Image (tube, rainbow, N blue to C red; front, side):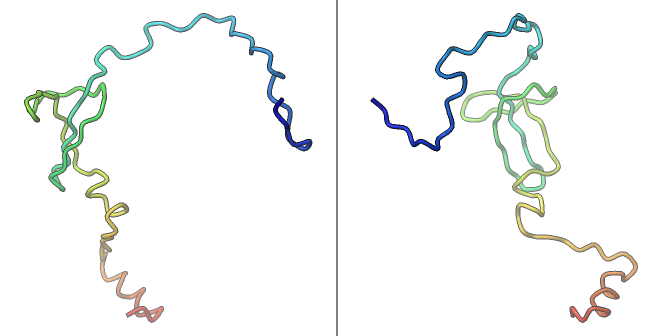
Length: 105
């Protein structure tokens, strides 16, 4: 017999099978063209393959297999948040004035 701590909550439904939903499972809601797609980050020269239903016009061959190709401008390999290389855009010297004002030079 399994010992249970006295303060442990009771199991949901007390071991009784959960009731099944009375509504039928929806059909024809999933995309038809769900397949492996190669995403190419043009700024970092990085490719990754993942299942998607994105529409593409180009293809690429990787290791003898042809994949639809979708080109990205930015991905986790090139985004400043993930790479740690933040760029500060100086608009009319605002950044310099802020740094001088708060002694951050």
